Length: 89
Image 1 (cartoon, one colour):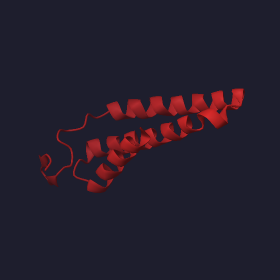
Image 2 (spheres, one colour; image 1 turned 90 degrees about the horizontal axis):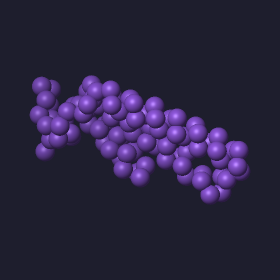
Image 3 (cartoon, rainbow, N blue to C red; image 1 turned 135 degrees about the vertical axis):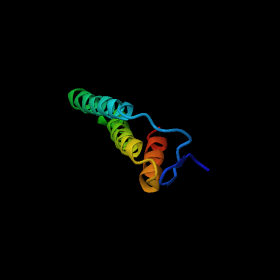
Protein backbone atom coordinates (compact mmCIF):
# COMPACT_ATOMS: atom_id res chain seq x y z
CA UNK A 1 0.00 0.00 0.00
CA UNK A 2 2.47 2.64 1.09
CA UNK A 3 5.79 3.08 2.75
CA UNK A 4 6.21 1.32 6.08
CA UNK A 5 7.47 3.59 8.84
CA UNK A 6 8.47 2.80 12.39
CA UNK A 7 4.97 3.57 13.62
CA UNK A 8 2.87 2.18 10.77
CA UNK A 9 2.09 2.52 7.10
CA UNK A 10 2.24 5.87 5.34
CA UNK A 11 0.17 6.84 2.30
CA UNK A 12 3.24 8.26 0.59
CA UNK A 13 5.33 6.08 -1.70
CA UNK A 14 8.43 7.95 -0.54
CA UNK A 15 9.35 10.34 2.24
CA UNK A 16 8.12 13.88 1.51
CA UNK A 17 10.95 16.42 1.46
CA UNK A 18 11.08 18.67 4.48
CA UNK A 19 11.11 22.41 3.81
CA UNK A 20 10.19 22.39 0.12
CA UNK A 21 6.47 22.53 0.83
CA UNK A 22 7.05 25.58 3.02
CA UNK A 23 8.66 27.40 0.09
CA UNK A 24 5.74 26.54 -2.19
CA UNK A 25 3.21 27.61 0.47
CA UNK A 26 4.95 30.99 0.76
CA UNK A 27 5.10 31.41 -3.03
CA UNK A 28 1.41 30.57 -3.46
CA UNK A 29 0.52 33.00 -0.65
CA UNK A 30 2.46 35.76 -2.42
CA UNK A 31 0.75 34.83 -5.69
CA UNK A 32 -2.68 34.97 -4.05
CA UNK A 33 -2.01 38.40 -2.52
CA UNK A 34 -0.75 39.73 -5.87
CA UNK A 35 -3.83 38.39 -7.65
CA UNK A 36 -6.09 40.05 -5.08
CA UNK A 37 -4.25 43.35 -5.62
CA UNK A 38 -4.50 42.95 -9.39
CA UNK A 39 -8.21 42.14 -9.24
CA UNK A 40 -8.81 45.14 -6.97
CA UNK A 41 -6.79 47.55 -9.09
CA UNK A 42 -8.28 46.59 -12.46
CA UNK A 43 -11.74 45.62 -11.17
CA UNK A 44 -11.47 42.22 -12.85
CA UNK A 45 -13.14 40.07 -10.20
CA UNK A 46 -15.72 38.78 -12.67
CA UNK A 47 -12.93 37.24 -14.79
CA UNK A 48 -10.22 36.26 -12.32
CA UNK A 49 -12.03 35.51 -9.05
CA UNK A 50 -10.88 31.89 -9.14
CA UNK A 51 -7.13 32.65 -8.96
CA UNK A 52 -7.05 33.81 -5.30
CA UNK A 53 -9.33 30.89 -4.36
CA UNK A 54 -7.03 28.35 -6.05
CA UNK A 55 -4.01 29.97 -4.43
CA UNK A 56 -5.61 29.57 -1.00
CA UNK A 57 -6.39 25.90 -1.71
CA UNK A 58 -2.81 25.22 -2.85
CA UNK A 59 -1.38 27.02 0.20
CA UNK A 60 -3.50 24.88 2.53
CA UNK A 61 -2.46 21.73 0.64
CA UNK A 62 1.24 22.53 0.93
CA UNK A 63 0.87 23.36 4.63
CA UNK A 64 -0.71 19.94 5.18
CA UNK A 65 2.05 18.31 3.12
CA UNK A 66 4.75 20.02 5.21
CA UNK A 67 3.00 18.83 8.37
CA UNK A 68 3.01 15.33 6.90
CA UNK A 69 6.73 15.52 6.14
CA UNK A 70 7.35 15.36 9.88
CA UNK A 71 4.46 12.99 10.68
CA UNK A 72 4.08 10.68 7.64
CA UNK A 73 1.90 8.14 9.45
CA UNK A 74 -0.96 10.63 9.98
CA UNK A 75 -3.61 9.49 7.49
CA UNK A 76 -6.08 12.34 8.02
CA UNK A 77 -3.64 15.06 6.98
CA UNK A 78 -2.32 12.88 4.14
CA UNK A 79 -5.84 12.66 2.75
CA UNK A 80 -6.40 16.39 3.28
CA UNK A 81 -3.16 17.37 1.56
CA UNK A 82 -3.79 15.13 -1.44
CA UNK A 83 -7.39 16.28 -1.75
CA UNK A 84 -6.45 19.97 -1.52
CA UNK A 85 -3.58 19.72 -3.99
CA UNK A 86 -5.69 17.81 -6.54
CA UNK A 87 -8.73 20.05 -6.14
CA UNK A 88 -6.65 23.22 -6.53
CA UNK A 89 -5.92 22.29 -10.10
